[in-house]
Length: 291
Image (tube, rainbow, N blue to C red; front, side, top):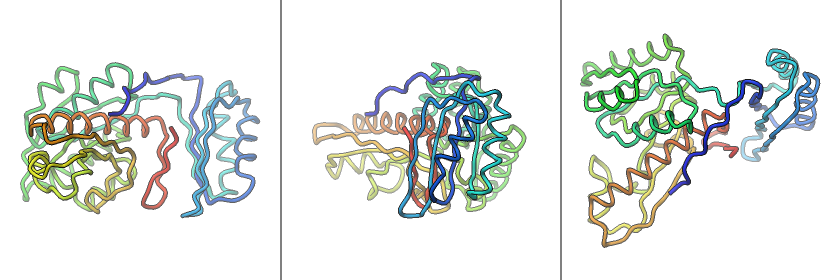
């Protein structure tokens, strides 16, 4: 099991910078020099050069700059020379998040509790579901909830509502908290790089709605979960976080289910934290994660 989520550091006086570009000499010198030119003091710096894709990734935390605008201008001034993508954000700013759910409460409950406890920098603007079961849970945490019955005929309409919500409420992250519907390729493309899903990845041979019962029948020794970015290749998007738990023959289906759901919840929450703290980068079919 993963360790409990740490309290999120938040400071309007400290900025997070992310940078990615083709790898070449002189990047760190140029970026750190731009930060210093804006009066910034670097409190954290992590970097990685990918030999697989030839890409360079960097995450910095900067404080004491003259202003966020000056730092952003300094970095964007040098970015074209490196063909770089750069972003600047305030440390710990809650990201505007839309959660999609179905009936299972464990992942949604864990996300909303940790948000309230200050362990996840989330601003959950709404929960949208294809069943009404989680309305009371959302109401307990003061989050807007709406549900629509999804059929083959209504799926496109629901997905349009999702995209309308993303646009109208300026959503930065979409989380599938055991949302038991397959997203269309069009929705996957629209949400590329900002939609996270959770599934029981260490049970790949067990399809359908009762994977833990099937795992019990087969006598598995490991169960686990994977959080990943959503793509139109089902459950094959770049992996953000994974965990496993050892189990044995003595555990009942109910016990395996409880262990599995706890693993799903903590794995998803950790992936969401990494994304919200700007620690995730997509590098081809995999991710670069700065912890």
